[in-house]
Image 1 (cartoon, rainbow, N blue to C red):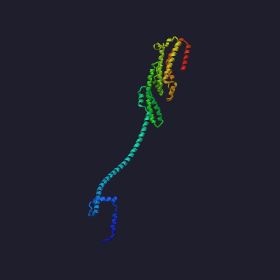
Image 2: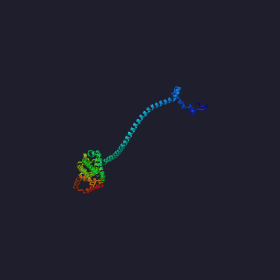
Image 3: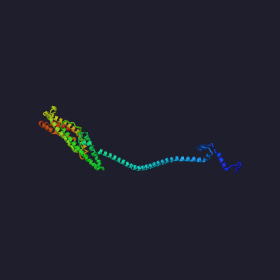
Image 4: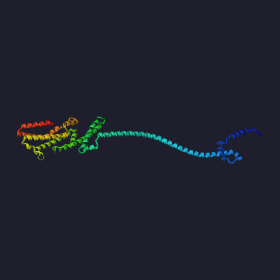
Length: 373
């Protein structure tokens, strides 16, 4: 069968047009031809016929190489997936542990807050207890000062501290700490009584030494002891009478010595040396009594204070005050010279019968007494 000239098979014409339409200068075509030249070595008729097979075989080989390489990648990905699964399991375990820790830490924080609150309460109670002990308890040094230490500022300060605590206990009695107030008052009373008894014995010893000197200097501790003993009227009165008795005896002995022996080394001369001159004799005796009266009054005031001070101090004690005044103590001291003075004046009256002289001296004595008191 022949084909007329100028006519083509439709399919062939379409293929020819398609081939003619291919742009051989495009990059895709050039790359394809370059790749084909690597597998297409022999440009023979048989090779051209097997071109499709060759290309398919080359594709299959390429795919097999890709699959081989992909299997290694797949195995690596599987290993990574295993590690990721293990990591996920670890994270899950960590989350569970964190949740458990969060629960336990919540309990721990609550317990910690509770303990901190209890600690704050305990510290507050400790401060209150320390403050209570400071206000209502004696230190070991103060107790030692009251019981064993030498008389001095330490003892008197501790004694004042005991009195202050004893007075402060009355505030406890008016509150709900009634029992504590009673126990503390009882303890402070024991310390007070022991200290006052010790103080009284010390004052007795010091008062005994006052009778051995004509014009003794008052120890400041003795004055402070007398002030402290005003809180115990019985002890104060007893010590005051001890002082008055000691000075009474000392003044009697001094007056007798002045009448009979005179001063040291005979100066001044004995008063009785002038017994022949009644006016001078009586004047010397009254002058001696006047001088002794002034020194004794100064001594008693330095020890026990003025009469108004004695009344003021005694007013703090419970009940009416029976504290002897300085005037009463001075009267007792002067009783030591009353009798020998009276005897001497009576002897002058009997021997010389000088009523005018006696009246004059009596007037002078009364005037002096009025001025003194």
